[in-house]
Length: 167
Image 1: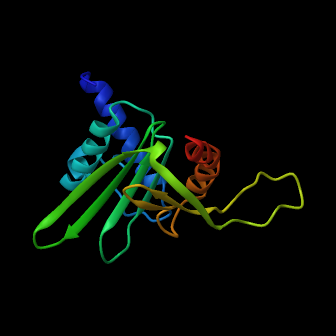
Image 2 (image 1 turned 45 degrees about the vertical axis):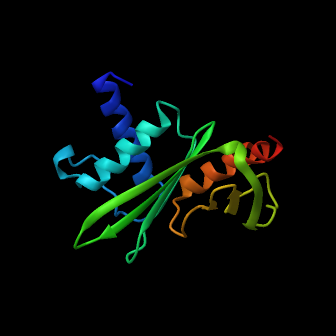
């Protein structure tokens, strides 16, 4: 990705995706202007864009507890990106990013799902999953603050995750 305007568009879209993945309003979504977004958030977005290398992000989840470290997990067609964000106030914020193939999914555990609906409503809903990969275990969504849109995206991702198990 060498086109600067394309990069800016991708970065803005990723900021918005991260911000909309949670009901909490703790992530800058870029609408206030680039100069108001914390440097560490720029760093995380740049790392995710670099490692996904122009691939579409199919699902993203953010965990942002008031105390402690944050996490982001993003799925493309081929890879899982896991970002750990260490928010240390005295030494600044830094992040570690790990990438592994979706085909390395060893098991998928459904921890919670809504009961079958009595009408024609879409289902499954309100999923809570645990994906066990060779190098990491990833809860989906990452925390209880997932937005309604994020929960619907996870339901759509489920079929794709089940295909990953067959690889």
